[in-house]
Length: 176
Image (cartoon, helix red, strand yellow):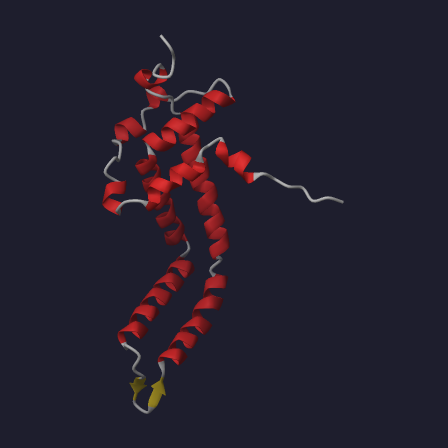
């Protein structure tokens, strides 16, 4: 029996995802949020409407993903913060790993000596790994990540597909 080959480039080329994420990698973070649209424009309920067909929805998504890209990044960041605040064990594990790495790095390769106890940096990293990995697996980071992907996908793509283009943009592609 032959394997089913799914051409991912055909699926993603319609939304032009490769070029959209290229802008995220180039430039500083302050430049990323310089084109943040006002909330009144982002949540303009007068422009909400159901798209007539798939091509109109695709056109709306293409326009809105570039027009509101900084707003969508803020929505994703807010959902990420919500996901961490509702999963205290995962938040604790992340803080434990970051603080542990920082404190072990502050030793600058020297051994940690507390009374008669002596531990090398390698032993400290191993101890941090032995504690953090099981704690991280118990905290279910994969389900949190999948929830974050699903929630942000529904929120962002839902907004992008139902938010109509402005009037001046709707007629810019048509010939006179």
